[in-house]
Length: 215
Image: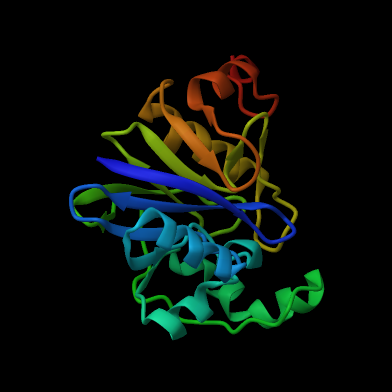
């Protein structure tokens, strides 16, 4: 079964997730935004073998540790969708704008599309294409655990910002309702920031995407 641990990183307290297959002990980091020393310590504490990096989107607080991990550990990078290439290419500018230490841009080994799959050891996660916060945002879903890693698409009580370049509010709301809600109300999700919730709870209470807003 897929196991996971959440490691908040950077001043933005971004939820990086260490996920691993408990049969093979192979692991991946989802959205290693920074504080690489904390991420490496979490990997060591879990006693797992890191085999790849998975990215939901190209914003600095989600990908800032990627180049360092690739350089130090020679890890392949999968995701996000290729529409987020412009964000990754502008990482040095993002650092300057957000007053972060300079990090290098990088080229993912595999761009992802909706309905793709990614593996972590013997476990498989489905890829859902959920643009709107960024144009190339993806979500990772594990059917066995009924668990989704949604990046900055959806939060407990909120949704991702859409005022960044190439963000779009209507696109994001549509993606949430068409790509996430059909997975089931019982699905738990790890957001990019803040506490976990379930799709069912957000469908009832989220002021942006609750069902009652749409008739």
